[in-house]
Length: 452
Image (cartoon, rainbow, N blue to C red; front, top):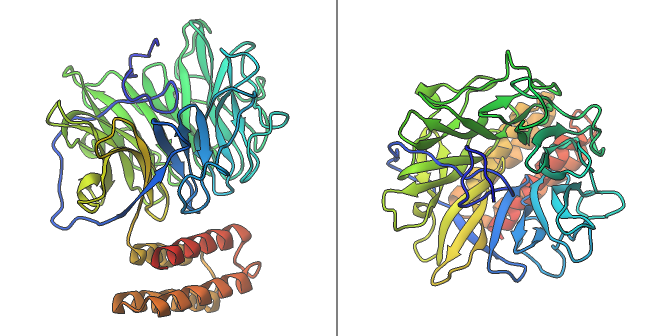
């Protein structure tokens, strides 16, 4: 397969997409976070990978040539989780999911050599009559890589050996060639152009790569060469952006100098790449890549190790520290976590792992401690600018839940979470929007499952 100079043929992520990684010194903290690890299984294939997780804990990804979407905080269920295809007997990959449970990706059409982008209805399988998003060009291959909660989809259309252009759709609409091509950092002829979009946030800001540099657009804007070029790390020629959060922080990977190394990066909100602050380092090797970011700015990805004889390891970057995720799970987990691709606002992480003694791969999900989840819920309530009476009622239940957890009284903690859910439903529509209520109820359901 022919690859772009910014792409690696090894560990392809999101179809024709990224796999590049960062060099630099790893940083370690005195006290590391701890996670519970879950092997989510397969749809029957030996090759499996998770590409995303929403705030309800639903996971999407690839199992062989089939796509899956799990139930919230659940393992893969072959009877219910296969997303299906646009064409019977074809193949599908799921690359993104929003908080409504809508899934996007790429699926075979009636031609075995042709794939189109798709977007499902919430928590539904692919409906070929409604979910095919079409293309920017006639006879083009098209991939959807991201979706926001408005149903806007981003991705790219490729005419093999001719051009690749990026798109952003209107909410819950198919690709409109007249309006959805987001342009390029460099004006030029169609022939040889290379623009791909890999992430979109709730404001409609899009990020990806245009020719050799990463970009971030304004909300619902086209690429503006004067303002949207993110540059590269020190001395680097090339960069690619793989994701963006609600604050406009962008993640991705960039070449560094003439060393041949590639470094993961995370920018400040709505800023270009800053070599002095945005290089995330590596786990001892020469390559790393950032693949997922949440609203708190926590980043996940994967990195080579110092030894060329070991597989890459998944990492978490949080609080200015780069953690090898294999060091923050139980020693007897039976898994080697090789890559992380998604992290939600609760801090749940998904990716790819190698089971001990196996040559295949499984999907994993890491759960942070329940106290961490409740703390995120407290922060969320505080960010909503609610009337004091409503805010105090909600935070009181959450604080009592935390107190019970610290005492080890999980029955009392579950009772307080139940009381919290009752209050959320009572306050829905009374300064607490449906979106806010649904988010809090989803967080509470996750916390209850963790302590049950």
